[in-house]
Length: 607
Image 1 (spheres, rainbow, N blue to C red):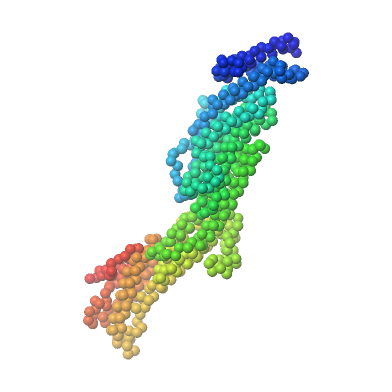
Image 2 (tube, helix red, strand yellow):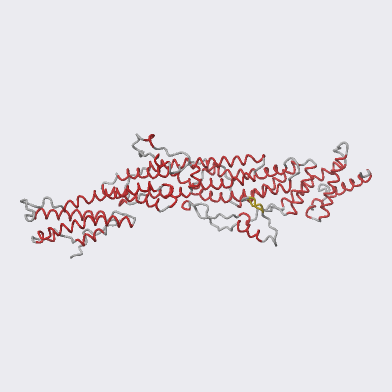
Protein backbone atom coordinates (compact mmCIF):
# COMPACT_ATOMS: atom_id res chain seq x y z
CA UNK A 1 0.00 0.00 0.00
CA UNK A 2 1.32 3.41 -0.96
CA UNK A 3 2.05 5.82 1.84
CA UNK A 4 -0.47 8.67 2.20
CA UNK A 5 2.11 11.24 1.16
CA UNK A 6 2.74 9.42 -2.14
CA UNK A 7 -1.00 9.09 -2.80
CA UNK A 8 -1.54 12.75 -2.04
CA UNK A 9 1.27 13.76 -4.37
CA UNK A 10 -0.07 11.59 -7.21
CA UNK A 11 -3.58 12.96 -6.73
CA UNK A 12 -2.31 16.50 -6.76
CA UNK A 13 -0.36 15.85 -9.94
CA UNK A 14 -3.49 14.32 -11.51
CA UNK A 15 -5.56 17.33 -10.51
CA UNK A 16 -2.98 19.60 -12.10
CA UNK A 17 -3.16 17.72 -15.43
CA UNK A 18 -6.96 17.83 -15.39
CA UNK A 19 -7.08 21.52 -14.64
CA UNK A 20 -4.55 22.31 -17.37
CA UNK A 21 -7.13 20.95 -19.86
CA UNK A 22 -10.11 22.73 -18.29
CA UNK A 23 -11.72 24.40 -21.30
CA UNK A 24 -13.73 26.74 -19.07
CA UNK A 25 -10.60 28.23 -17.57
CA UNK A 26 -8.08 28.13 -20.42
CA UNK A 27 -8.44 29.47 -23.94
CA UNK A 28 -5.59 27.23 -25.05
CA UNK A 29 -7.46 24.18 -23.70
CA UNK A 30 -10.60 25.38 -25.46
CA UNK A 31 -8.90 25.52 -28.84
CA UNK A 32 -7.18 22.15 -28.67
CA UNK A 33 -8.40 18.58 -28.34
CA UNK A 34 -6.40 16.10 -26.30
CA UNK A 35 -7.12 13.09 -28.50
CA UNK A 36 -5.94 14.77 -31.70
CA UNK A 37 -2.52 15.36 -30.21
CA UNK A 38 0.41 13.43 -28.81
CA UNK A 39 -0.26 9.87 -27.59
CA UNK A 40 1.78 10.45 -24.47
CA UNK A 41 -0.39 13.40 -23.52
CA UNK A 42 -3.53 11.30 -24.10
CA UNK A 43 -2.21 8.56 -21.85
CA UNK A 44 -1.13 11.14 -19.20
CA UNK A 45 -4.64 12.56 -19.12
CA UNK A 46 -6.30 9.13 -18.89
CA UNK A 47 -3.90 8.13 -16.12
CA UNK A 48 -4.80 11.33 -14.29
CA UNK A 49 -8.50 10.48 -14.52
CA UNK A 50 -7.76 6.98 -13.22
CA UNK A 51 -5.82 8.44 -10.32
CA UNK A 52 -8.67 10.76 -9.38
CA UNK A 53 -11.20 7.91 -9.57
CA UNK A 54 -8.94 5.77 -7.41
CA UNK A 55 -8.55 8.51 -4.84
CA UNK A 56 -12.30 9.12 -4.79
CA UNK A 57 -13.07 5.43 -4.30
CA UNK A 58 -10.57 5.13 -1.45
CA UNK A 59 -12.06 8.08 0.41
CA UNK A 60 -14.31 7.08 3.29
CA UNK A 61 -16.81 9.82 2.49
CA UNK A 62 -17.43 11.37 -0.88
CA UNK A 63 -17.01 15.09 -0.69
CA UNK A 64 -18.49 16.80 -3.73
CA UNK A 65 -16.60 19.97 -2.87
CA UNK A 66 -13.20 18.34 -2.54
CA UNK A 67 -10.51 19.21 -5.09
CA UNK A 68 -10.51 15.64 -6.42
CA UNK A 69 -14.29 15.62 -6.87
CA UNK A 70 -14.24 18.98 -8.65
CA UNK A 71 -11.34 17.91 -10.85
CA UNK A 72 -13.18 14.67 -11.74
CA UNK A 73 -16.27 16.62 -12.79
CA UNK A 74 -14.09 18.82 -14.97
CA UNK A 75 -12.49 15.69 -16.43
CA UNK A 76 -15.87 14.16 -17.25
CA UNK A 77 -16.99 17.31 -19.07
CA UNK A 78 -13.71 17.27 -20.96
CA UNK A 79 -13.98 13.58 -21.83
CA UNK A 80 -17.55 14.11 -23.04
CA UNK A 81 -16.30 16.80 -25.43
CA UNK A 82 -13.44 14.56 -26.58
CA UNK A 83 -15.85 11.64 -27.04
CA UNK A 84 -18.14 13.78 -29.16
CA UNK A 85 -15.25 15.18 -31.19
CA UNK A 86 -13.86 11.72 -32.06
CA UNK A 87 -17.31 10.55 -33.12
CA UNK A 88 -17.94 13.67 -35.19
CA UNK A 89 -14.66 13.17 -37.00
CA UNK A 90 -16.07 9.88 -38.34
CA UNK A 91 -19.71 10.66 -39.09
CA UNK A 92 -19.55 10.53 -42.87
CA UNK A 93 -21.99 8.02 -44.45
CA UNK A 94 -20.78 4.49 -44.92
CA UNK A 95 -18.59 4.20 -48.03
CA UNK A 96 -20.37 3.70 -51.35
CA UNK A 97 -18.51 0.45 -52.07
CA UNK A 98 -19.92 -0.97 -48.85
CA UNK A 99 -23.44 0.08 -49.77
CA UNK A 100 -23.68 -2.17 -52.81
CA UNK A 101 -24.87 -5.70 -52.88
CA UNK A 102 -25.33 -8.20 -55.66
CA UNK A 103 -28.96 -8.29 -56.72
CA UNK A 104 -28.59 -11.18 -59.22
CA UNK A 105 -31.91 -11.90 -60.97
CA UNK A 106 -33.91 -12.18 -57.80
CA UNK A 107 -37.28 -11.18 -59.19
CA UNK A 108 -39.03 -12.73 -62.14
CA UNK A 109 -41.68 -10.09 -62.51
CA UNK A 110 -39.67 -8.03 -64.98
CA UNK A 111 -42.90 -7.05 -66.78
CA UNK A 112 -43.85 -5.05 -63.69
CA UNK A 113 -40.39 -3.55 -62.92
CA UNK A 114 -38.57 -0.38 -63.90
CA UNK A 115 -34.85 -0.49 -64.54
CA UNK A 116 -32.51 1.23 -62.12
CA UNK A 117 -30.84 4.25 -63.61
CA UNK A 118 -27.39 3.24 -62.43
CA UNK A 119 -25.41 0.01 -62.67
CA UNK A 120 -24.15 -0.94 -59.24
CA UNK A 121 -20.99 -2.84 -58.38
CA UNK A 122 -21.25 -6.13 -56.52
CA UNK A 123 -20.69 -6.10 -52.79
CA UNK A 124 -20.26 -9.85 -52.82
CA UNK A 125 -17.48 -9.68 -55.41
CA UNK A 126 -15.75 -6.95 -53.43
CA UNK A 127 -15.95 -9.06 -50.29
CA UNK A 128 -14.56 -12.12 -52.07
CA UNK A 129 -11.73 -10.04 -53.55
CA UNK A 130 -10.75 -8.72 -50.14
CA UNK A 131 -10.86 -12.23 -48.65
CA UNK A 132 -8.56 -13.53 -51.36
CA UNK A 133 -5.98 -10.85 -50.54
CA UNK A 134 -5.84 -11.33 -46.77
CA UNK A 135 -2.18 -12.28 -47.04
CA UNK A 136 -1.27 -8.72 -47.94
CA UNK A 137 -4.20 -6.68 -46.70
CA UNK A 138 -6.16 -7.04 -43.49
CA UNK A 139 -9.83 -7.37 -44.47
CA UNK A 140 -12.27 -5.08 -42.68
CA UNK A 141 -15.18 -7.49 -43.37
CA UNK A 142 -16.36 -10.56 -41.56
CA UNK A 143 -19.32 -12.69 -42.49
CA UNK A 144 -21.96 -14.31 -40.31
CA UNK A 145 -24.45 -15.98 -42.62
CA UNK A 146 -25.20 -13.11 -45.03
CA UNK A 147 -24.20 -10.39 -42.57
CA UNK A 148 -21.18 -8.34 -43.60
CA UNK A 149 -19.82 -5.97 -41.01
CA UNK A 150 -17.58 -3.06 -41.95
CA UNK A 151 -15.35 -0.82 -39.84
CA UNK A 152 -17.36 2.37 -39.43
CA UNK A 153 -14.63 4.02 -37.36
CA UNK A 154 -10.85 3.32 -37.50
CA UNK A 155 -9.50 0.91 -34.90
CA UNK A 156 -7.36 3.52 -33.12
CA UNK A 157 -10.37 5.83 -32.77
CA UNK A 158 -12.48 2.94 -31.42
CA UNK A 159 -9.75 2.28 -28.85
CA UNK A 160 -9.84 5.93 -27.72
CA UNK A 161 -13.65 5.93 -27.54
CA UNK A 162 -13.61 2.82 -25.37
CA UNK A 163 -10.99 4.35 -23.10
CA UNK A 164 -13.22 7.39 -22.60
CA UNK A 165 -16.41 5.33 -22.19
CA UNK A 166 -14.79 3.16 -19.51
CA UNK A 167 -13.92 6.19 -17.40
CA UNK A 168 -17.20 8.05 -17.92
CA UNK A 169 -19.27 4.98 -17.02
CA UNK A 170 -17.05 4.21 -14.01
CA UNK A 171 -17.66 7.77 -12.81
CA UNK A 172 -21.45 7.41 -13.19
CA UNK A 173 -21.79 9.23 -16.48
CA UNK A 174 -23.36 6.34 -18.46
CA UNK A 175 -26.45 8.31 -19.53
CA UNK A 176 -24.38 11.27 -20.80
CA UNK A 177 -22.08 8.91 -22.68
CA UNK A 178 -24.97 7.11 -24.37
CA UNK A 179 -26.71 10.38 -25.30
CA UNK A 180 -23.60 11.79 -26.95
CA UNK A 181 -22.88 8.56 -28.77
CA UNK A 182 -26.44 8.01 -30.02
CA UNK A 183 -26.99 11.59 -31.21
CA UNK A 184 -23.81 11.58 -33.31
CA UNK A 185 -24.09 8.06 -34.69
CA UNK A 186 -27.78 8.46 -35.52
CA UNK A 187 -26.83 11.37 -37.77
CA UNK A 188 -24.35 9.11 -39.56
CA UNK A 189 -26.96 6.36 -39.96
CA UNK A 190 -29.50 8.90 -41.27
CA UNK A 191 -26.95 10.07 -43.85
CA UNK A 192 -26.40 6.48 -44.98
CA UNK A 193 -30.16 5.91 -45.28
CA UNK A 194 -30.45 9.04 -47.37
CA UNK A 195 -27.69 7.73 -49.61
CA UNK A 196 -29.71 4.55 -50.05
CA UNK A 197 -32.83 6.56 -51.01
CA UNK A 198 -34.69 5.55 -47.84
CA UNK A 199 -36.95 8.56 -47.52
CA UNK A 200 -38.58 9.91 -44.38
CA UNK A 201 -42.17 9.23 -45.38
CA UNK A 202 -45.08 8.54 -43.10
CA UNK A 203 -47.37 5.57 -43.77
CA UNK A 204 -49.98 8.06 -45.02
CA UNK A 205 -47.45 9.66 -47.40
CA UNK A 206 -46.56 6.27 -48.85
CA UNK A 207 -50.17 5.22 -49.35
CA UNK A 208 -50.95 8.42 -51.25
CA UNK A 209 -48.26 7.76 -53.88
CA UNK A 210 -49.23 6.45 -57.32
CA UNK A 211 -48.56 2.72 -57.73
CA UNK A 212 -46.19 3.31 -60.66
CA UNK A 213 -44.04 5.46 -58.36
CA UNK A 214 -44.22 2.89 -55.59
CA UNK A 215 -43.03 0.11 -57.90
CA UNK A 216 -39.69 1.86 -58.30
CA UNK A 217 -39.51 2.69 -54.60
CA UNK A 218 -40.20 -0.93 -53.65
CA UNK A 219 -37.31 -2.16 -55.73
CA UNK A 220 -35.01 0.42 -54.17
CA UNK A 221 -36.35 -0.36 -50.71
CA UNK A 222 -35.56 -4.08 -51.09
CA UNK A 223 -31.98 -3.30 -52.00
CA UNK A 224 -31.72 -0.71 -49.21
CA UNK A 225 -33.24 -3.02 -46.59
CA UNK A 226 -30.71 -5.75 -47.32
CA UNK A 227 -27.84 -3.32 -46.99
CA UNK A 228 -29.28 -1.63 -43.91
CA UNK A 229 -29.77 -4.87 -42.00
CA UNK A 230 -26.79 -6.87 -43.22
CA UNK A 231 -24.21 -4.08 -43.45
CA UNK A 232 -25.26 -0.82 -41.83
CA UNK A 233 -27.19 -1.96 -38.74
CA UNK A 234 -24.91 -4.97 -38.22
CA UNK A 235 -21.85 -2.72 -38.37
CA UNK A 236 -23.41 -0.25 -35.94
CA UNK A 237 -24.12 -3.10 -33.54
CA UNK A 238 -20.50 -4.26 -33.72
CA UNK A 239 -19.25 -0.73 -33.17
CA UNK A 240 -21.39 -0.46 -30.04
CA UNK A 241 -19.98 -3.78 -28.83
CA UNK A 242 -16.40 -2.72 -29.54
CA UNK A 243 -16.84 0.46 -27.51
CA UNK A 244 -19.27 -0.51 -24.73
CA UNK A 245 -19.33 -4.29 -24.32
CA UNK A 246 -18.60 -5.37 -20.75
CA UNK A 247 -18.88 -1.87 -19.32
CA UNK A 248 -22.00 -2.73 -17.34
CA UNK A 249 -25.77 -2.22 -17.53
CA UNK A 250 -25.89 -3.53 -21.14
CA UNK A 251 -24.43 -0.25 -22.32
CA UNK A 252 -23.75 -1.67 -25.78
CA UNK A 253 -27.42 -2.66 -26.25
CA UNK A 254 -28.63 0.69 -24.95
CA UNK A 255 -26.37 2.62 -27.33
CA UNK A 256 -27.32 0.43 -30.28
CA UNK A 257 -31.06 0.90 -29.76
CA UNK A 258 -30.71 4.65 -29.09
CA UNK A 259 -28.86 4.91 -32.41
CA UNK A 260 -30.81 2.51 -34.60
CA UNK A 261 -34.41 2.46 -33.39
CA UNK A 262 -35.52 5.59 -35.27
CA UNK A 263 -33.84 4.64 -38.59
CA UNK A 264 -35.09 1.03 -38.28
CA UNK A 265 -38.67 2.22 -37.77
CA UNK A 266 -38.26 4.60 -40.71
CA UNK A 267 -37.04 1.67 -42.85
CA UNK A 268 -39.78 -0.77 -41.88
CA UNK A 269 -42.55 1.85 -42.08
CA UNK A 270 -42.36 1.57 -45.86
CA UNK A 271 -42.99 -2.18 -45.94
CA UNK A 272 -45.75 -1.79 -43.37
CA UNK A 273 -47.49 0.86 -45.48
CA UNK A 274 -47.42 -1.41 -48.53
CA UNK A 275 -48.74 -4.35 -46.51
CA UNK A 276 -51.85 -2.45 -45.41
CA UNK A 277 -52.46 -0.49 -48.61
CA UNK A 278 -55.50 -0.95 -50.85
CA UNK A 279 -55.33 -4.30 -52.61
CA UNK A 280 -55.38 -4.66 -56.37
CA UNK A 281 -54.09 -7.36 -58.77
CA UNK A 282 -51.19 -5.34 -60.17
CA UNK A 283 -49.64 -5.10 -56.68
CA UNK A 284 -49.29 -8.85 -56.10
CA UNK A 285 -45.82 -9.39 -57.51
CA UNK A 286 -44.22 -6.39 -55.84
CA UNK A 287 -45.79 -7.45 -52.56
CA UNK A 288 -44.35 -10.93 -53.09
CA UNK A 289 -40.97 -9.34 -53.82
CA UNK A 290 -41.24 -7.48 -50.52
CA UNK A 291 -42.38 -10.63 -48.72
CA UNK A 292 -39.52 -12.72 -50.13
CA UNK A 293 -36.96 -10.05 -49.35
CA UNK A 294 -38.18 -9.61 -45.78
CA UNK A 295 -38.47 -13.37 -45.27
CA UNK A 296 -34.91 -13.75 -46.51
CA UNK A 297 -33.80 -10.98 -44.14
CA UNK A 298 -35.62 -12.30 -41.07
CA UNK A 299 -32.79 -14.54 -39.79
CA UNK A 300 -30.39 -11.61 -40.13
CA UNK A 301 -32.84 -9.27 -38.38
CA UNK A 302 -33.05 -11.77 -35.52
CA UNK A 303 -29.25 -11.88 -35.36
CA UNK A 304 -28.67 -8.14 -35.51
CA UNK A 305 -31.55 -7.34 -33.14
CA UNK A 306 -31.08 -10.33 -30.84
CA UNK A 307 -31.08 -8.49 -27.51
CA UNK A 308 -34.11 -8.08 -25.28
CA UNK A 309 -34.09 -4.32 -25.74
CA UNK A 310 -34.44 -4.67 -29.54
CA UNK A 311 -37.27 -7.21 -29.40
CA UNK A 312 -39.76 -4.64 -30.72
CA UNK A 313 -37.86 -4.46 -34.02
CA UNK A 314 -37.93 -8.25 -34.41
CA UNK A 315 -41.64 -8.38 -33.60
CA UNK A 316 -42.42 -5.61 -36.07
CA UNK A 317 -40.56 -7.39 -38.88
CA UNK A 318 -42.47 -10.63 -38.21
CA UNK A 319 -45.81 -8.79 -38.11
CA UNK A 320 -45.10 -6.97 -41.39
CA UNK A 321 -44.16 -10.29 -43.00
CA UNK A 322 -47.46 -11.76 -41.83
CA UNK A 323 -49.42 -8.78 -43.19
CA UNK A 324 -47.65 -9.05 -46.55
CA UNK A 325 -48.60 -12.73 -46.71
CA UNK A 326 -52.22 -11.89 -45.92
CA UNK A 327 -52.18 -9.12 -48.54
CA UNK A 328 -50.92 -11.59 -51.17
CA UNK A 329 -53.71 -14.06 -50.30
CA UNK A 330 -56.30 -11.28 -50.46
CA UNK A 331 -55.04 -10.00 -53.80
CA UNK A 332 -55.20 -13.47 -55.38
CA UNK A 333 -58.80 -13.79 -54.23
CA UNK A 334 -59.64 -10.34 -55.60
CA UNK A 335 -57.93 -11.20 -58.88
CA UNK A 336 -60.13 -14.29 -59.23
CA UNK A 337 -63.20 -12.17 -58.64
CA UNK A 338 -61.99 -9.52 -61.12
CA UNK A 339 -61.51 -12.16 -63.83
CA UNK A 340 -64.98 -13.54 -63.21
CA UNK A 341 -66.66 -10.14 -63.22
CA UNK A 342 -64.65 -8.37 -65.97
CA UNK A 343 -67.50 -6.49 -67.64
CA UNK A 344 -66.40 -5.63 -71.19
CA UNK A 345 -69.10 -6.48 -73.74
CA UNK A 346 -67.66 -5.08 -76.99
CA UNK A 347 -66.54 -8.06 -79.13
CA UNK A 348 -62.89 -8.03 -80.19
CA UNK A 349 -62.68 -7.61 -83.99
CA UNK A 350 -62.11 -10.77 -86.00
CA UNK A 351 -62.59 -13.12 -83.06
CA UNK A 352 -58.95 -12.86 -82.05
CA UNK A 353 -57.42 -13.17 -78.57
CA UNK A 354 -59.28 -11.08 -76.01
CA UNK A 355 -57.07 -8.67 -73.97
CA UNK A 356 -58.44 -10.29 -70.81
CA UNK A 357 -57.10 -13.67 -71.95
CA UNK A 358 -53.62 -12.28 -72.57
CA UNK A 359 -53.62 -10.42 -69.25
CA UNK A 360 -54.81 -13.39 -67.20
CA UNK A 361 -52.41 -15.87 -68.79
CA UNK A 362 -49.45 -13.51 -68.42
CA UNK A 363 -50.53 -12.97 -64.82
CA UNK A 364 -50.71 -16.64 -63.92
CA UNK A 365 -47.42 -17.14 -65.75
CA UNK A 366 -45.90 -14.72 -63.26
CA UNK A 367 -47.72 -16.50 -60.44
CA UNK A 368 -45.89 -19.68 -61.46
CA UNK A 369 -42.59 -17.80 -61.18
CA UNK A 370 -43.43 -17.18 -57.53
CA UNK A 371 -44.76 -20.69 -56.92
CA UNK A 372 -42.34 -21.54 -54.10
CA UNK A 373 -43.55 -18.57 -52.07
CA UNK A 374 -47.21 -18.86 -53.01
CA UNK A 375 -47.40 -22.60 -52.31
CA UNK A 376 -46.50 -21.74 -48.72
CA UNK A 377 -48.88 -18.77 -48.51
CA UNK A 378 -51.96 -20.13 -50.30
CA UNK A 379 -53.41 -22.72 -47.94
CA UNK A 380 -57.17 -22.37 -48.59
CA UNK A 381 -58.86 -23.89 -51.64
CA UNK A 382 -60.77 -21.61 -54.02
CA UNK A 383 -64.44 -21.03 -53.24
CA UNK A 384 -66.14 -23.31 -55.76
CA UNK A 385 -68.49 -26.27 -55.84
CA UNK A 386 -71.80 -26.51 -54.05
CA UNK A 387 -71.51 -22.99 -52.67
CA UNK A 388 -72.11 -21.60 -56.15
CA UNK A 389 -74.11 -24.45 -57.66
CA UNK A 390 -77.26 -22.32 -57.97
CA UNK A 391 -75.48 -19.16 -59.15
CA UNK A 392 -75.66 -18.80 -62.95
CA UNK A 393 -72.94 -16.16 -62.85
CA UNK A 394 -70.30 -18.58 -61.57
CA UNK A 395 -69.06 -21.71 -63.37
CA UNK A 396 -70.27 -24.98 -61.96
CA UNK A 397 -67.01 -26.79 -61.34
CA UNK A 398 -65.91 -29.37 -58.81
CA UNK A 399 -62.15 -29.28 -58.16
CA UNK A 400 -62.15 -32.35 -55.91
CA UNK A 401 -60.91 -34.59 -58.72
CA UNK A 402 -57.71 -32.51 -58.92
CA UNK A 403 -57.05 -32.28 -55.20
CA UNK A 404 -55.07 -35.50 -54.91
CA UNK A 405 -52.41 -34.53 -57.43
CA UNK A 406 -52.36 -30.73 -57.16
CA UNK A 407 -51.26 -28.17 -54.59
CA UNK A 408 -53.74 -25.62 -53.27
CA UNK A 409 -52.06 -23.01 -55.47
CA UNK A 410 -52.55 -25.28 -58.50
CA UNK A 411 -56.26 -25.54 -57.68
CA UNK A 412 -56.45 -21.74 -57.69
CA UNK A 413 -54.75 -21.60 -61.11
CA UNK A 414 -57.16 -24.20 -62.53
CA UNK A 415 -60.04 -22.22 -61.05
CA UNK A 416 -58.77 -18.96 -62.58
CA UNK A 417 -58.57 -20.62 -66.01
CA UNK A 418 -62.07 -22.04 -65.56
CA UNK A 419 -63.59 -18.66 -64.66
CA UNK A 420 -61.67 -17.03 -67.52
CA UNK A 421 -63.27 -19.49 -69.95
CA UNK A 422 -66.65 -18.88 -68.30
CA UNK A 423 -66.28 -15.13 -68.85
CA UNK A 424 -65.04 -15.63 -72.42
CA UNK A 425 -68.03 -17.84 -73.15
CA UNK A 426 -70.29 -15.00 -71.99
CA UNK A 427 -68.39 -12.54 -74.19
CA UNK A 428 -68.69 -14.85 -77.22
CA UNK A 429 -72.48 -14.43 -77.05
CA UNK A 430 -72.08 -10.77 -78.03
CA UNK A 431 -71.03 -11.83 -81.56
CA UNK A 432 -73.96 -11.75 -83.96
CA UNK A 433 -72.35 -14.42 -86.14
CA UNK A 434 -72.35 -17.82 -84.42
CA UNK A 435 -69.39 -18.97 -86.52
CA UNK A 436 -67.32 -16.04 -85.28
CA UNK A 437 -68.34 -16.79 -81.69
CA UNK A 438 -67.01 -20.34 -82.06
CA UNK A 439 -63.81 -19.05 -83.71
CA UNK A 440 -63.35 -16.60 -80.82
CA UNK A 441 -63.61 -19.42 -78.27
CA UNK A 442 -61.27 -21.61 -80.31
CA UNK A 443 -58.67 -18.84 -80.49
CA UNK A 444 -58.81 -17.99 -76.82
CA UNK A 445 -58.88 -21.53 -75.42
CA UNK A 446 -56.04 -22.49 -77.78
CA UNK A 447 -54.07 -19.48 -76.52
CA UNK A 448 -54.65 -20.63 -72.91
CA UNK A 449 -53.54 -24.14 -73.89
CA UNK A 450 -50.39 -22.89 -75.61
CA UNK A 451 -49.39 -20.66 -72.69
CA UNK A 452 -49.65 -23.58 -70.27
CA UNK A 453 -47.95 -26.04 -72.59
CA UNK A 454 -45.12 -23.59 -73.26
CA UNK A 455 -44.34 -23.03 -69.57
CA UNK A 456 -42.80 -26.05 -67.77
CA UNK A 457 -43.76 -24.52 -64.41
CA UNK A 458 -47.39 -23.91 -65.39
CA UNK A 459 -47.72 -27.30 -67.07
CA UNK A 460 -46.39 -29.05 -63.98
CA UNK A 461 -48.75 -27.15 -61.69
CA UNK A 462 -51.90 -27.45 -63.81
CA UNK A 463 -51.24 -30.98 -65.01
CA UNK A 464 -51.74 -32.85 -68.25
CA UNK A 465 -55.24 -34.00 -67.32
CA UNK A 466 -56.55 -30.44 -67.36
CA UNK A 467 -54.47 -29.72 -70.46
CA UNK A 468 -56.33 -32.53 -72.24
CA UNK A 469 -59.60 -30.87 -71.27
CA UNK A 470 -58.44 -27.63 -72.88
CA UNK A 471 -57.44 -29.52 -76.02
CA UNK A 472 -60.90 -31.00 -76.23
CA UNK A 473 -62.45 -27.59 -75.64
CA UNK A 474 -60.68 -25.71 -78.44
CA UNK A 475 -61.09 -28.65 -80.85
CA UNK A 476 -64.79 -28.70 -80.03
CA UNK A 477 -64.98 -24.97 -80.75
CA UNK A 478 -63.22 -25.56 -84.10
CA UNK A 479 -65.72 -28.30 -84.97
CA UNK A 480 -68.63 -26.05 -84.01
CA UNK A 481 -67.22 -23.29 -86.20
CA UNK A 482 -66.99 -25.63 -89.18
CA UNK A 483 -70.50 -26.91 -88.69
CA UNK A 484 -71.87 -23.42 -88.29
CA UNK A 485 -70.14 -22.12 -91.42
CA UNK A 486 -69.75 -24.97 -93.85
CA UNK A 487 -72.73 -27.28 -93.42
CA UNK A 488 -75.00 -24.77 -95.16
CA UNK A 489 -72.39 -24.12 -97.89
CA UNK A 490 -71.86 -27.84 -98.56
CA UNK A 491 -75.64 -28.33 -98.53
CA UNK A 492 -75.64 -26.58 -101.92
CA UNK A 493 -73.51 -29.43 -103.34
CA UNK A 494 -75.94 -32.23 -102.52
CA UNK A 495 -77.54 -34.38 -105.22
CA UNK A 496 -81.00 -34.40 -103.69
CA UNK A 497 -83.54 -32.34 -105.63
CA UNK A 498 -81.56 -32.20 -108.88
CA UNK A 499 -82.99 -35.29 -110.57
CA UNK A 500 -86.40 -35.44 -112.14
CA UNK A 501 -88.68 -38.29 -113.38
CA UNK A 502 -86.90 -40.70 -111.00
CA UNK A 503 -84.13 -41.30 -113.51
CA UNK A 504 -80.67 -41.17 -111.99
CA UNK A 505 -78.63 -41.30 -115.17
CA UNK A 506 -80.52 -38.55 -116.95
CA UNK A 507 -83.21 -36.06 -116.30
CA UNK A 508 -81.13 -33.50 -114.30
CA UNK A 509 -83.04 -30.28 -113.71
CA UNK A 510 -80.82 -27.61 -115.22
CA UNK A 511 -82.71 -24.79 -113.54
CA UNK A 512 -82.27 -26.43 -110.14
CA UNK A 513 -78.59 -27.08 -110.94
CA UNK A 514 -78.05 -23.45 -111.94
CA UNK A 515 -79.63 -22.33 -108.66
CA UNK A 516 -77.35 -24.69 -106.74
CA UNK A 517 -74.20 -23.28 -108.40
CA UNK A 518 -75.45 -19.73 -107.88
CA UNK A 519 -76.24 -20.42 -104.24
CA UNK A 520 -72.84 -22.06 -103.67
CA UNK A 521 -71.00 -19.21 -105.38
CA UNK A 522 -72.86 -16.60 -103.35
CA UNK A 523 -72.36 -18.38 -100.06
CA UNK A 524 -68.69 -19.13 -100.65
CA UNK A 525 -68.04 -15.55 -101.76
CA UNK A 526 -69.75 -14.22 -98.63
CA UNK A 527 -67.82 -16.57 -96.37
CA UNK A 528 -64.59 -15.68 -98.17
CA UNK A 529 -65.23 -11.96 -97.95
CA UNK A 530 -66.20 -12.12 -94.29
CA UNK A 531 -63.82 -14.69 -92.91
CA UNK A 532 -60.72 -13.29 -94.60
CA UNK A 533 -61.11 -10.42 -92.10
CA UNK A 534 -61.33 -12.82 -89.17
CA UNK A 535 -58.06 -13.57 -87.46
CA UNK A 536 -56.39 -16.68 -86.13
CA UNK A 537 -53.10 -15.30 -84.77
CA UNK A 538 -51.49 -18.70 -84.21
CA UNK A 539 -49.90 -19.73 -87.52
CA UNK A 540 -50.16 -23.46 -86.95
CA UNK A 541 -53.77 -23.34 -85.81
CA UNK A 542 -54.67 -21.13 -88.78
CA UNK A 543 -53.07 -23.56 -91.21
CA UNK A 544 -54.71 -26.59 -89.56
CA UNK A 545 -58.17 -25.04 -89.82
CA UNK A 546 -57.60 -24.08 -93.45
CA UNK A 547 -56.55 -27.64 -94.25
CA UNK A 548 -59.61 -28.98 -92.46
CA UNK A 549 -61.86 -26.62 -94.46
CA UNK A 550 -60.15 -27.56 -97.72
CA UNK A 551 -60.50 -31.28 -96.95
CA UNK A 552 -64.27 -30.82 -96.61
CA UNK A 553 -65.02 -28.25 -99.31
CA UNK A 554 -62.61 -29.02 -102.13
CA UNK A 555 -63.41 -32.74 -102.64
CA UNK A 556 -67.14 -32.02 -102.39
CA UNK A 557 -66.88 -29.23 -105.00
CA UNK A 558 -64.60 -31.28 -107.25
CA UNK A 559 -67.04 -34.19 -107.17
CA UNK A 560 -70.09 -31.97 -107.75
CA UNK A 561 -68.35 -30.17 -110.61
CA UNK A 562 -67.28 -33.44 -112.15
CA UNK A 563 -70.79 -34.84 -112.09
CA UNK A 564 -72.67 -31.78 -113.32
CA UNK A 565 -70.25 -29.57 -115.29
CA UNK A 566 -71.47 -30.93 -118.65
CA UNK A 567 -75.07 -30.02 -117.86
CA UNK A 568 -74.12 -26.38 -117.30
CA UNK A 569 -71.62 -26.06 -120.11
CA UNK A 570 -74.15 -27.38 -122.62
CA UNK A 571 -76.44 -24.47 -121.81
CA UNK A 572 -76.22 -20.68 -122.15
CA UNK A 573 -73.64 -18.54 -120.27
CA UNK A 574 -72.02 -21.35 -118.27
CA UNK A 575 -69.50 -18.87 -116.85
CA UNK A 576 -72.30 -17.30 -114.80
CA UNK A 577 -72.75 -20.53 -112.88
CA UNK A 578 -69.40 -22.30 -112.90
CA UNK A 579 -67.47 -19.23 -111.79
CA UNK A 580 -64.61 -20.98 -110.04
CA UNK A 581 -62.27 -23.83 -110.66
CA UNK A 582 -61.11 -26.17 -107.90
CA UNK A 583 -57.80 -24.32 -107.92
CA UNK A 584 -59.62 -21.00 -107.40
CA UNK A 585 -61.26 -22.35 -104.25
CA UNK A 586 -57.99 -23.82 -103.00
CA UNK A 587 -56.37 -20.39 -103.35
CA UNK A 588 -59.36 -18.66 -101.78
CA UNK A 589 -59.08 -20.81 -98.64
CA UNK A 590 -55.56 -19.39 -98.19
CA UNK A 591 -57.11 -15.94 -97.64
CA UNK A 592 -59.09 -17.07 -94.62
CA UNK A 593 -58.27 -15.80 -91.11
CA UNK A 594 -55.53 -13.35 -92.14
CA UNK A 595 -57.33 -10.47 -90.47
CA UNK A 596 -57.64 -8.07 -93.39
CA UNK A 597 -60.17 -7.66 -96.24
CA UNK A 598 -59.69 -9.12 -99.72
CA UNK A 599 -61.01 -7.88 -103.06
CA UNK A 600 -64.74 -7.83 -103.65
CA UNK A 601 -64.65 -10.95 -105.82
CA UNK A 602 -62.69 -14.16 -105.64
CA UNK A 603 -59.58 -14.32 -107.76
CA UNK A 604 -60.39 -16.43 -110.80
CA UNK A 605 -56.99 -17.73 -111.75
CA UNK A 606 -58.43 -20.02 -114.39
CA UNK A 607 -59.37 -17.05 -116.54
